[in-house]
Amino acid sequence: MSLERLNWKGRLTCFCGIVWREALRFAKQRERFLSALVRPLVWLFLFAAGMRTVQGFPPDPPYQTWISYEIYVAPGLCAMIQLFNGLQSSLSMVYDRETGAMRTLLVSPYPRWFLLSSKLMAGVAVSVVQVYAFLLIAYFWEIEPPLIGYLLVLPALILSGMMLGALGLFLSSAIKQLENFAGVMNFVIFPMFFASTALYPLWRVEENSPYVADILRYNPFTYCVELIRFALYAQVNWTALAVVAGTTVLFLGAAIYAYDPSKGMIGRKR
Amino acid sequence: MACSKCLGITGVSHTFGKTKALQDVSLDVAEGRFVALLGVNGAGKTTLFSLITRLYDNISGSIEVCGHDVRREAGPALAQLGVVFQSRSLDMSLTVRQNIRYHGALHGIGRREALKRGDKALERVGLLDRADAKVATLSGGQIRRAEIARALLHDPKLLLLDEATVGLDVQSRRDVVSTVRNLVTNQNVGVLWATHLFDEVEPADDVVVLHKGSVLAKGLASDIAGGRTLSDAFLLLTGVSETALAS
Image 1 (cartoon, rainbow over the protein chains, first blue to last red):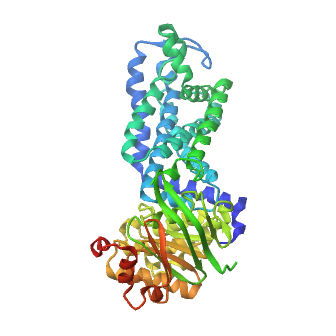
Image 2: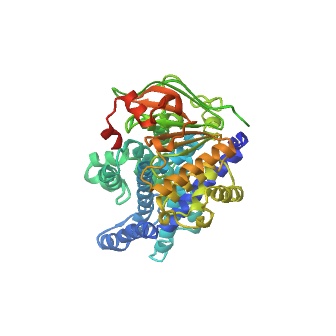
Image 3: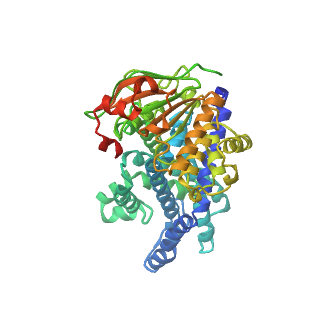
């Protein structure tokens, strides 16, 4: 191989190739797309519809009027899609490691941090498509954020997708076998989702239990939800932005460390 | 860029916890040479391959690919390297061409160029007519040949093959071995061929005998055999029983 290809143009080609492969795999796995869509829709159509009869929420930023439960829960469901997608990507990393496909990626001459970040971004691109498909359907269920919100939510989705993907990437380095993955799903996805503001606002939880509210406050997923919620209604939640950006750097750094052959955990495994 | 010494390994050791997987391993692969790395299962062949491909980091000794140290200059070293792993590493849900395009991208080769090179590489391994077939529909031997074509896409100077013929029928094994030997003869590629199957080694090949993580012998296959069959010489060197060898 010509060493000239190790330049930035070569890296761009490499990045596009990784995204292309992820998109191709995603397009071939229709059931993955459907399940990613059905899960939040079940919450929206059934759970949220049921909850609508018992409560609505008074005006509280970013909302300026009383809102129905469906409207409240929609951004949390967008984040849920990304949470599942991030962890699903890590599942595919563990699978790739077991089948040997991971080696194909890691023997590329480009730096490992670059390869892993590219893989992460490819997963984020897939999750963004899923979220927009969900928002499109939700629009017909009277979840109608301002049109500009659909555009402004994009950077929020990219950032939150990166945070959750980086978490998945880190977990994939720590999981030795595919069989252990179900346990991680139970210990990561469900606690993260239920102990966040995806389903109930912080102030309401605080009224009932300040301790539980503290758990919500320390859960980085809460900030993904809020970042998306505010962006969807054309506002910026600066605290959420800072926490999500910081946590992304932390998780990604940990994942790159774990996959580094000279430092991390991969070299210690057989 | 030509390089006379495709691979130079000097004094490499590696441990997994308290288990010593490799101890002071040194070997060379010259340009246009077929070097057989002989060892039973668990000898340390795959660990050595993982170190050369930088899946693991070598703590002691040095590994150079075409003069580039894999730790200090990982990019240029890996750029000169083509690998066929022991486990299948093609994406079974994609076609051969799609896999090749993906591999090209991982080496910075654009779509058009990758497809052009890919067709050439597939022709070289006699698989061009199956380029648009899903990998899942190929036979074991065809998958191996597709992996070789993929490994050749970026014109590597060194080709590593880890037990590339395991699980293949006799005809497929012959095809794979002859494909690789043609590359050595016609393309001047240096090959490190890890195997425990002695009939794949010819008298004029270089051989490195690896046992329990240490190099027991290296030299021409005919010299190591010394008038016996290579397998007899191997059994004598390693003290492995014939039954253990067969398994």
